[in-house]
Every structure is written in C-alpha cells, then in structure tokens.
Image 1 (tube, rainbow, N blue to C red):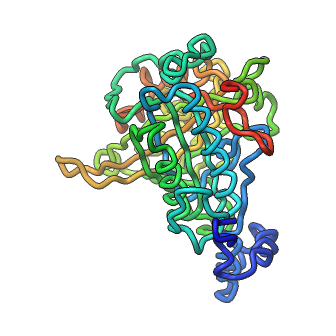
Image 2: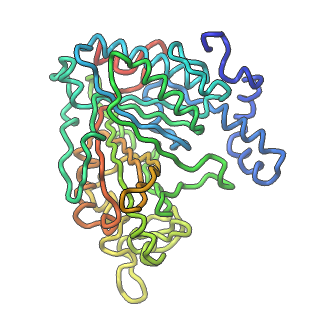
Image 3: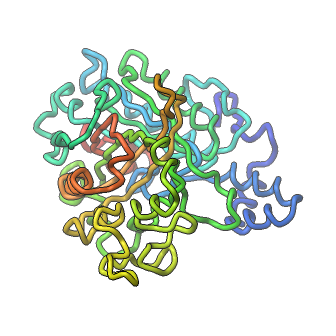
Length: 404
C-alpha cells in the first residue's frame, strides 16, 4: 500500500479483477491479436503480473527478460561503513518488496507509476569487489570476485564500469522501471551516489502471436541455447554452493557491447548468417532443422565444407567448444543516439549469471576474442562483475547473512 493506503492500481479499479485476468496467461496474448475486443484484457493481464521479491534466489535472474530495464551502479559514501550499507540494503529491500507488489514506496514516493500495476517488476542487487574494502569485510570477499582480465579489442570506459553496488530493475512498463530506479536513487542519498546507469529494452510481451525468442539489434534471434531451469547441471552452473554468505547466490557479469550496425547492415543476409551460424529468418542452425534443433558442429554442406563456419559465433561460443562452460544470459538492447561520426550508439546490455566467472564468462570470452567472426562487428565498452547474494526470506533483506 502507498502512504495514503491505496495501491497503485486502486485508482484504475479492482486489483482482484486484474489478478484474475492475469491467470489466463499467454492465451490472452493470442486472443488479443485475433480479436480487437480482447486487447483491454491483455493489457490488464500484462500490468497485473507479479514477480515476488522474496525467495531463495533474487528475482530478475530466472525470469524471462522484461520489456524495459535500468542497470545502475552506486558507490558507497565515504564514512557510510558497514552500518550505512546495512541500513541501505534494509531500506532498498523493503522498498523493492512493496514496489514489486504494485504498492507505493514507503519513502521518496514520487507517483510516477501511480496508475500502473506491478508489470512483472523485478529488482536485483549485487556487490562489487570494491565494496568489501570499504566496509571492512575484505576477508569475506569471494575469490570469484577477482577482477576480469583484459580481453583483446576491449575499449572499456572505467567511468561506466564497476561500482560498489549494482542494481538491475526490469519491468514490462518503462514508467514502472524508472519509478523504481528513481525511488532507490533518492533513498540512497547520503549513503551511496550513482556511478553509472544504462537503460535497455526487449520485446514487449504479446507483441508476437506466441512466445518467441527475442531478437537483438542485428536482427538475429538471440538466446536460443540459454540454459534453462530443470536441465541437468543448471543449478550448479548458475548458483553458488558452500556454506558462506554467497551460497545460493550467483555472479553477474555486465558488459555494454556496442554493435557496429553500419558495417553489419552492409553485409548481405547470407554473409550475416555465416558469421552467426544460424538463419536470420527463424534462428535455425545452418546445420539444419528448426531454431531449437541442436547445432551439429560436424555437419557439412554439399560442397564438403563445414555447414557452420570455423569462426561462426555459435561454434566458438558453444559449451562443447569451451569445456562445457555455460552462463544464464539475460540481455537487453540499448539505443543512445549517434556518435560523432554519425554511427549508431546502440547494441547490447549483456548480463550473464553464473556460479563462477572463471569457469563461465572468462573462458568463453577469451575464446570469442580470439576466433569469433562476430567480434569484428562489436566493441565491449563497459564492464562490471558483481556478487549477487541469495534472495531474502519474508521479513529479511538482501545481504543480511553477510552484513549481520
């Protein structure tokens, strides 16, 4: 509830009715395209979707990417110390729990999203390596937070990288995302200051007749081979074990990757497909089949040449080419105008969750930097690595096991 005792959706009507509509799920999306009268119901279902904040893992990791995202990093204020960090995480966790239910913030409420529902809002928090020194917990910093190595062709802007605290805010409505970001930023006043922020977007739910893998700004279907919950070894690849505070958490690698779209779009479609190793029209591998057909790296064409080129992205990035290394990717596109030379400042906000970056992102990126044909068309321009604590139980807060 807001400070006035009203939920954000009370002004529009019954929240209970919205939840009942939401239970219809994906079927409503198809009906909305088939018949115009169903559109209001589909919109209501989209707005009323709730992702619980509390649980064994933080929200925003296992859920599909939403239509909008804000990524941000904060630096802890001088003198804030462990007590200040504890206060901030308690306040941020309580606020995130309320906002994800569609309620107003307990403080710093600005009414930006007053007439919106929760819209699948998720808020995810992470700790950068530098934070542990600032709060006197150097001995509790996990070894997996070792700095990422430099990779060939990186052009990292350190002013838009790293940071003590990382926040990922996703939702299916841009105002809901900005509202949550602005509230958290204001609540941090005196305890932490904004280091950098980035806004991204994905496909809006219901924009296609049925759920489909999204496309990136190169027009390619992106995310087909993402590991999925329930698959053999998924938990071990994504979440940490052990008994210390990171147990049940994960590590997030965040990269802002600019796409050289002018160069890419000048390639004919068949050349683009050879660079990726998949058909652009439907995402099917060039070795044959449909989008979800396993890639056959040994397949050859009628001319005897490899169906998937030796430097094709899907070959170089495949777990089979990297000792089984895998990450749970949750990327978003971004478009920030044009650069001085007139080229688009646009690309991918890459977010990847894994149990150990030294066994996930690092070996894969080393391989990509050395032999991926796609590397000619991208530039890695910012970078961050964060320990993402496990989720908070009801009545608890993120980071409690470390800070209490």
